[in-house]
Amino acid sequence: MFGTMVRIEVFAPAASATERGNPSRDGNAAEAAISKAFEAMAAVERATNNYSPTSEVSRLNASAETTAADSAETTADSARTAAAHPAALRLPALRPIVTLSLKMARETDGAFDPTIWPVTEIWGFGAKPRVPSQAVLRDALRLVGYGRLRLGTDGATIVLPVRGMGLDLGGISKGYAVDRAVGALRRSGIRHALITTGSTTAVFGGKPDGSKWKIGIENPRAPGKMIGVISLKDGAVSTSGDYQNYFVREGIRYHHVLDPKTGMPARGAMSVTAILTADPPPADDTTGPPDTTGSSDIAARSDALSTALFVMGSESASRYATAEMPRGGIVVVMPDRSVRTAGNLRGGISGLLKRI
Image (cartoon, rainbow, N blue to C red):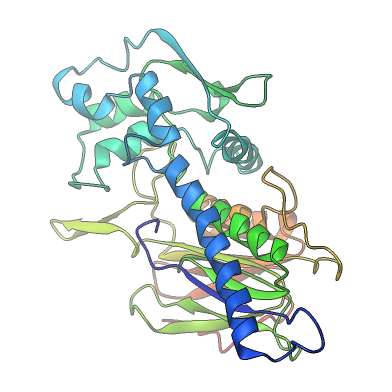
């Protein structure tokens, strides 16, 4: 799912005192809850997958005639002559994540930009990676700009007003899916759980013994090894890095975290980990987070923030974390292999290396 391994770990409560501790009953309840969580995540993937022609995001992009990758190579002025060509579709499954994406774009001044698809497409990370020419890149960049994205008043319509525009929700969709899984688990009566896609993890309720969940921060130059461990009871952690999806040409590493302003891979860090803490849900709350934007979207926010702060670079990211993340913070692995932190981590990381 999402091109990665998804893991869900839960502790299932017994329905009554007579059933408490019944392995069969507890196991069945846990399996049913996990199944619903996976279904919720799969629904997000079906809506947001740019590489599936039947997804809602692909239908929207196709309606806007997103052909930058094909036409730009043969028509140098393709984007310059892009005429107004509004594409408006009712996409109720996609609308909430697009609404949240626009919010995150505004909060990060465009460092996270959901309209970056024309640039992502010409780099070919989903199929055949390549380094685009500067002329092709300039043409694609003219189609990027979250400020032009429009949402209809009916609560379902999304409008791409310029021919060739397109959405890429890859920087937030995993987190959004994790949030939906959290909701499904809570509605199933689960009170303690961890959900991870590898790059994004959400936890709630701690463990039944009162201890916190442990989440490792991966070393961007030694896969499988950790540079520190985060202790978290309720919240989310996301990492963006230059090691997750990349290729090398003539000794240069080109990775998938693209700067919406330049169209090039961001170079200010090897990895950025965004950590957000949350209040535990009320003990009698079984509703789970709603499928709309709001405080429940903590994993989606951490996902988008890790992307945006990676793009910003260390200095701007540190200022943002200090000012805008009162209940969280960041861990940055710099290009020189030093490790920096910023924000309000409150001693929540153990064994953090100073240099990798």
